[in-house]
Length: 428
Image 1 (spheres, helix red, strand yellow):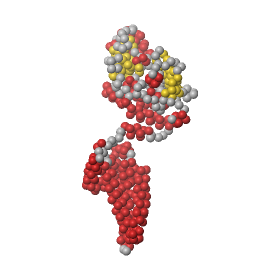
Image 2 (image 1 turned 120 degrees about the vertical axis):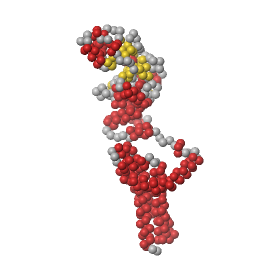
Image 3 (image 1 turned 30 degrees about the vertical axis):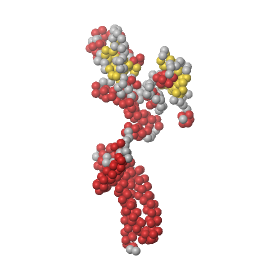
Image 4 (image 1 turned 135 degrees about the horizontal axis):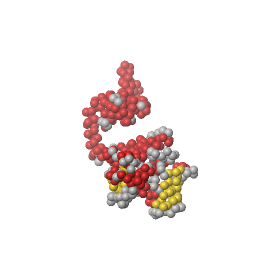
């Protein structure tokens, strides 16, 4: 037996195991590296990060090259080990070679490099990028043939690659948001804000608008002095004005424009032509999504729009601030409860106005009320109860208790909402 030849074969086995570790670790690093961080590094001029991005775009080719390289060196290492063991232990060497190579490959060529790569994916992926690109180039001719064979066989069984779903990027992003960790209160606010941004295209302006019953409007038929006083007393800078009927909105008066005109007339309100000052009203359909409306606000450089239904009837008003508050929460509220119309009680329940939207409640308190068939808390109760409840009635929906505190005509104006206790929620 040639000891020098055996030593050479053992050295070759060690080298092959190191190469196997490289291929296995590279595969894990390339697939586990953060796409966002790599993009950020590439934007800053990191050429290695850009290499990783380019390699990952090759998807199948990258995985195929690394798997082919890994399989080749593992098979070669096992063959050499079998040859060495047969020389040392005759026929029993096959058993020893199998046991030893299995342990060596699993520990040093699979588990250890993949574990390291998993926890250092970004760093390792940029380090091995040049070698991975070289590997893809070397194996490219073989990979073309292999890919053709694989696609042919998959198509033969009706499982073509072109029919495989690549997943929903939006849902992937939502999942990443849910994994966001940190201080509970701060993290909850951040998650809510990010989810709200993703939801802009699925929410209609009718769900966040100020309803016409709560709109501030001004009748142009009254004396100019009264109009000026109403504008000065209002908390709003833009106010719709109408003639004859509240449905007949003919314009929007801006408080600053009115004050400027007053200054020009020396403070004589009777000389101000309010109708001439009013800007042309902008009417939008109630089915407009918040995303589209936000884009429209930006393009038109306006902050105010009147919402109408399919018949042209006035429904309410929506502003740029309404959409921003949908993302970041109530901008003006300085109280403990961020949602206007909600007051927390000492016993853990909440006194909530019927006009408070379901989206605001779900976002603020991480409740899970459905909102497909209604927009407000009052709408939820009417939908579930299938009738107009009386004050004092109690309902239980979705694990919550709803006490009807006040009803005005056919409108539910105040509800006491009692969430389920934590232990009850956990049991469910």
